[in-house]
Image 1 (cartoon, one colour):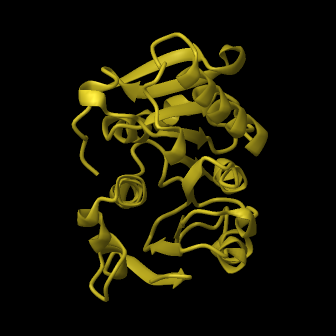
Image 2: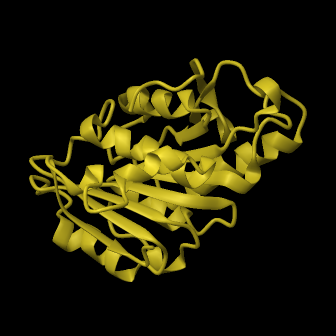
Length: 236
């Protein structure tokens, strides 16, 4: 969950119609590195500024994250942001040739968590992360899914919203429950949920074998306190 090797930079009022915020490494393409594009979905009534610590940390690990400024984000907005990034990779400008379109990711929280699952069907998305998310069409995913909830989340309850996403998933899925976490835990830097998120992205996007310990084995990080009741499906 610590900052990665890239210095993050935030760019406001960019993307489609200037209605997005970009979190990216300050310097792009060092030593020929191609940056994975990511699309982020806010929780209802919130905007990207409330997730600056989390999204800047993701950017510091090499990702270029686009986040709709909408406080009622949905899958079409998230998809539009991702498609815009992919277009910039082919156009003249700072992002030209700097991205790896084959390794896109979809991430979101609450309302945006459900939208992230819906967006995960995008052909370029290789993995999806949903923090305390509303139900999404996980049956349409083609890449692994990480789900978070908390034992004290009484707003987007696991049983009503997150369990159905898990149950419908046909891809490798890890379902993590944080003891004592309420619905607001992912705000800011995402607290205890930040490190597993970075590990998940590094594992599935970069092939980082050092991140496997968060998810694999009886003594995995998410199999021990403060985590409880880890669930997996389609898992090897």
